[in-house]
Image 1 (cartoon, rainbow over the protein chains, first blue to last red):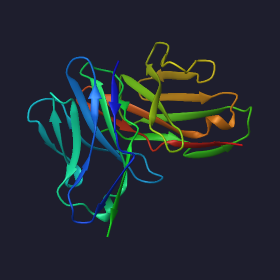
Image 2 (image 1 turned 135 degrees about the horizontal axis):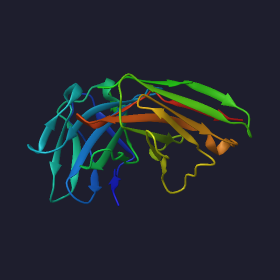
Image 3 (image 1 turned 90 degrees about the vertical axis):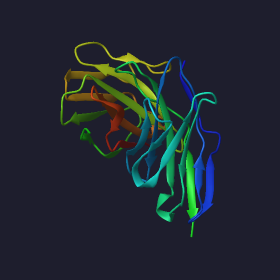
Image 4 (image 1 turned 60 degrees about the horizontal axis):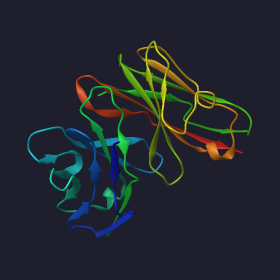
Length: 114
Length: 114
């Protein structure tokens, strides 16, 4: 069975500091990994994905994530946080089989203070 | 990407009644997915809707409670039947496209049952 773990309910960082939001996963076979962001009263926005290739993937709004197969992790990072990055972040996984649904982690609230 | 329109965006319903949520996609897609996001929680997959066949429900969700229709490749409905306050959630429609690994989401339907 597939599963995603986001061990932190909340991450607090000061504006301008680097941020990391953690994610580990469990899936049989080669995983497709994703990060989504949800702002209050808005839908889910896609940030980035890992399918294959370079372990460091870059996405929207300056975010990046590093795929680590041995640690089954896919942590979200940003070198310099902005107050506007404050939102709820979801890690998701699915198998590489076409037509399968995403399985989501519980979400991590990122709070960036000025 | 895919543009997904969900209706209604929100509703307040009396317990014991039913609500049908519509999901319209701007292009043909094979698979459509329905998720529930309970207050302060992650997204939980309700069912997968494949055009021309019965929806496939996840553990804990049954067709009598959440009947789904998928009459064509661009449209689906989810009905929340015999509602109780515990059904108060955001319901999201999602699709994947063959040329893209990530899922796209509608804005969601915020349901409050009183």
